[in-house]
Length: 175
Image 1 (cartoon, helix red, strand yellow):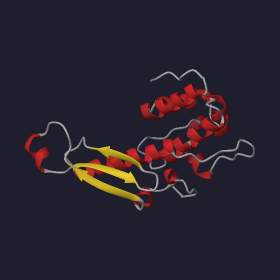
Image 2 (cartoon, one colour):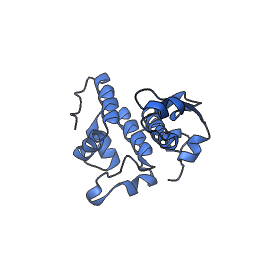
Image 3 (cartoon, one colour):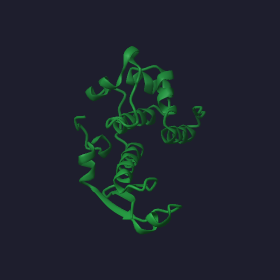
Image 4 (spheres, helix red, strand yellow):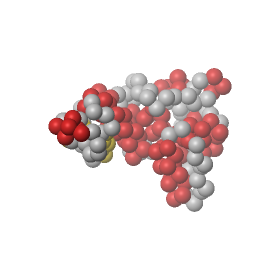
């Protein structure tokens, strides 16, 4: 993905890592002797924003680092806004490849561009007062496709439903 934003959610993993601090610690829970001797759990903090994420589910520190970074990038996408003006809004060039046949938004949560897509969707939802139909129109996708996208990620859906509640709109159903 080409970095075209000052927002950390749109940066590559390498660029985000330049502003992060890592900590390793002994993870909680069962695991016996190995768990008590190794610091395989990790916490990554984006220093400028103070947003952090942890991972401790694996006995491998490397696997936990990868999971924590993925969680951090998603949290950055959810928490850091880039204001959008509907007047004159143009879809970013990097977004077009995310659209599959029939202009349906198709992207895996593992895709490096996923946090940027989430950030753009949330920015448009915020600008539209939580209107999924208006945000979908701005993205060039159907309302049902946007709802499907939101429902595939529990954390994203919860965030959007909190946003919609603040606007006195009904929550979107869960998957």
